[in-house]
Every structure is written in structure tokens, then in C-alpha cells.
Length: 170
Ligand SMILES: CC(C)(COP(=O)(O)OP(=O)(O)OC[C@H]1O[C@@H](n2cnc3c(N)ncnc32)[C@H](O)[C@@H]1OP(=O)(O)O)[C@@H](O)C(=O)NCCC(=O)NCCS
Image 1: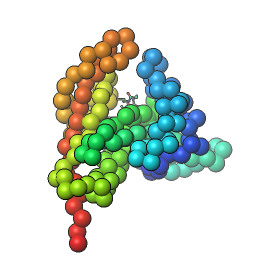
Image 2: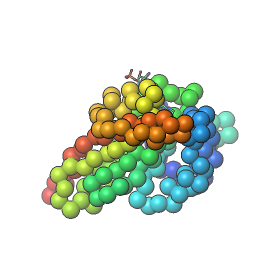
Image 3: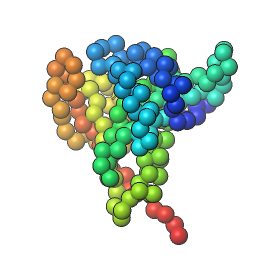
Image 4: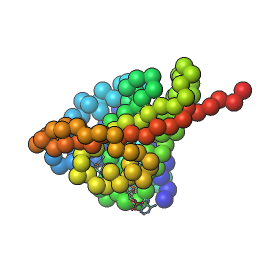
């Protein structure tokens, strides 16, 4: 499929928030301010999935996004990943996850102080089978459980993936 990724900007905020609302109809929708916060942080990686052809108004057709934020000098957290429901199950989630992993690897290549590997962590609602399937397919493993992590006392599952620091060739 013709999908490319690019870094999100403030101009994309409305569509990002719309996709979030379309993806989650529960109380766990991120506030618009949360997306604004991540858009201002230079250490955050905030990527969009964009269809190659433009929409009717000549703008990018944004179909999904992913956010990753550093937790320590050897850990990144996937804050969230959303694909517009009309575009799910076509490999876009996997494209976003693969691309953000590459960008995290690059960050560790330049930032690391001799570490051999790093960890990407995330939390997923235990009944979110689509997301769990995607993460498992991409090599993430269950590392624990967070009781009452979500609204309405729903539990979260912690998952992570260890990746090697990208080696620089001199
Ligand atoms: C979770 C989520 C991001 C997954 O995104 P997605 O784009 O649907 O995921 P993918 O298409 O990459 O992968 C899921 C399945 O799609 C299918 N798929 C993958 N590539 C495909 C392709 N090129 N063509 C057709 N189907 C494909 C596969 O069935 C794949 O699973 P499988 O390979 O194990 O069978 C999406 O369901 C979503 O946005 N959900 C709502 C928000 C959410 O819950 N986010 C997670 C928060 S933790």
C-alpha cells in the first residue's frame, strides 16, 4: 500500500484528535492538550501515516499516528498508536511501529553512552485484541499487568521489546 510516514506538526492537531476520537469511544480518549504537549517536546517522536495521494482538498490524507517518548537513557515508551478505523487491518499499524522503532534506534545510536541494547515499553488494554496482535507480531512480549490502569477498573498489560543499539561504522 502507498503509505509514507512523516513527523507531525501543530497543523495536524485537529486530524490527530479526530482519529483519536474515532478510535476510542470510551473515557480513555487523550485530551487534545496531551497531543499538544507531545508536539512541543523535541525528545518525543510523533509520526503520522499519510496516504501518498492527496485528499479532495489537496491536503495530505492522514490515516494514523504513533507517539513514542523517552523514559530513561535506555527506554522509550510507545504512548499510543491509532489508525483511522476505515484504514485498519491493512498493515498501517505495522508500518508506523516499524518506522518509530527505526527512529528510536537512530536516537540511541547518537545518544547512547556505550549501552548495548535498549527497551521499548507500552501498555495495552487487556481486551484490545487488535493491538495485542499487532504488538505480538512485531516481537513485543508481555512483561506484567497493571491493575485498574484504565477507566472503569480495566487492567492494562505491559509489553516490551528489547532492541540492539544501532552500531556506527567508523
Ligand atoms: C491497534 C491498531 C493501531 C492496529 O493497526 P492496524 O493498521 O489495523 O494494524 P495492521 O494492519 O498493521 O496489523 C493488524 C492486522 O492487519 C492485517 N494486515 C497486516 N498487513 C496487511 C496488509 N498489507 N493487507 C491486509 N491486511 C494486513 C493482518 O491481519 C494483521 O494481523 P496478522 O498479520 O496477525 O493477521 C488499530 O487497530 C487501532 O488504531 N486501534 C484503535 C486504537 C488502539 O487501540 N490503539 C492501541 C493503543 S495501545
